[in-house]
Length: 334
Ligand SMILES: O=C(O)CCC(=O)C(=O)O
Image (cartoon, rainbow, N blue to C red; front, side):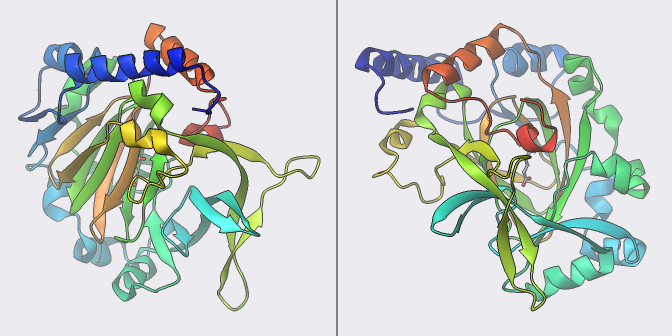
């Protein structure tokens, strides 16, 4: 939020976050064993925009039993895959270039699954790899794996959202790969298949405590000697393309620059193989992982209802202009 806000507005925002925490968010992310019914899920989580960790929900999926680097090497070694490469682990994150902060997209490159796994084994210091294409790559690029996912176990979610997912994604990468803090206009059913993921989650009622700014966009390119450099992305008239993104790194928040972040309610949760995280739409999330962690997720378009309009109004009051969602640049929409 910019510092010019009248204090009445700041106080009103603080009332919103503290009431939300006291009345329905609670001190930690709710956890359960065994999948809920669609009714329970809608009533206790979707309708309240409250996350849920469902422990050991997919332990009997063939995917959880089989998918690991050895299995992929045995069965998919020659398969061409699209891999995001960065020098610092941040695909879609902030980095310095020419004395200023840029929002930088990864270099996307094709290689075989075998080459990808070799690189993960080597842990090249300058090349941090992540399969993180969000174009429904599980069903588009990895069809041979789909049979190992028992989607009938997710019928509680399909019934609750009452629509087909817009994307079903496959994620696998290096433990140095980080997904920087952002939010999505999706209801997210996130299933960790192998290893674990560490999430930092911040509710949308804390939007005023999560600083955002417009950044010029860039993309990593590899020079002939293999060095990764940032190349600015320009619009049709040669100006840097801009995107609004979260300014703060929850792992090392700069509270001198962003003091309001100290008031944000940041929940930390580890999601293990066999667990499902329901990550409600518009929650900020920052994600890290164990080495070679494999996950899949289902993105269901959110309902553009009164709550969406309310959060849009809050963003406006904070002086934000939208953005800070992956969809902004992946799908050119928000
Ligand atoms: O697993 C990750 O690295 C990021 C996941 C994410 O941002 C999402 O599912 O929306």
